[in-house]
Length: 353
Image (cartoon, rainbow, N blue to C red):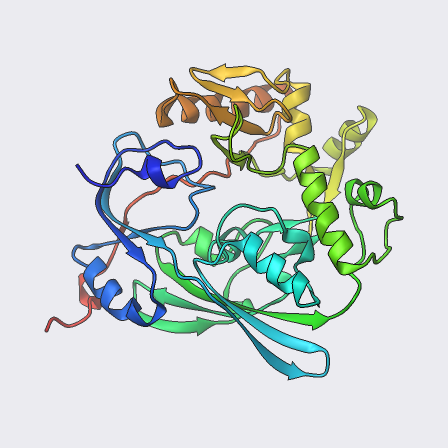
């Protein structure tokens, strides 16, 4: 039996992979990429497994776990620096490093599970910051073209929790990520009331960098946004739905009902997926399916127990989305990624020998 994907995902669900490779040495990537191309399909790439829903039957192909570590800093002149992190570096570790170095730009992304290489895929964001705000370039392997090259922000198709890497799943493997950050003693302006309350500050204030970063971690923990190391909510994948786009009329109705409406960076108004779930009757702690529950702190996080399977988790997601659609006429889009096979064109395979 192959390596169980359940051992490499935070949901701890998923059967075996046909072949499982671990990438630890950046210099060895060409050899590993060659070894991974033993068929006409691209491998599925795992980071921390915090946003992955692997099938009970496993994955019929090659899985690569990105485990490269390392952070380097290059001066750009003045107060600006470029920080480059290997794809397997945990995002939380990168944030902690930059804050310790007095570098501002991603201080509000602390406490988010997953790797740095996974952050551009989802255009990871929190408290008004997104990884795309500071990204200068990234290095990626293109499985369709069989080559490694740099990609710049304009080539990445960034939007709200999306990117080219998400809309073309399996085509690219991100190898490292570079960010432009600034040497500052103060954090970026506070844009979210939750964070302002945690800091006893007003919106728009710029608190001390380290204080702001710590407040993010505290607020995430208090609101059930952190991934606990143990306990009944430990097996989870964080938020299971994106905040959905809504029409102005829907926004008016939600505000009248006391619900939050967000102005997203990509333009459309968005409702709170968690608020919609609770209005539909799914409160924290509610059982949604066999072995699947809303977490004790928030409806938007689903946790699983020993009798859960990937199939029952998928059914639970479908039940939640259907209830919101029939009640509010708003369609929810799941966040967890389900591994699937991407076919490669034989004519683009690297020459043998």
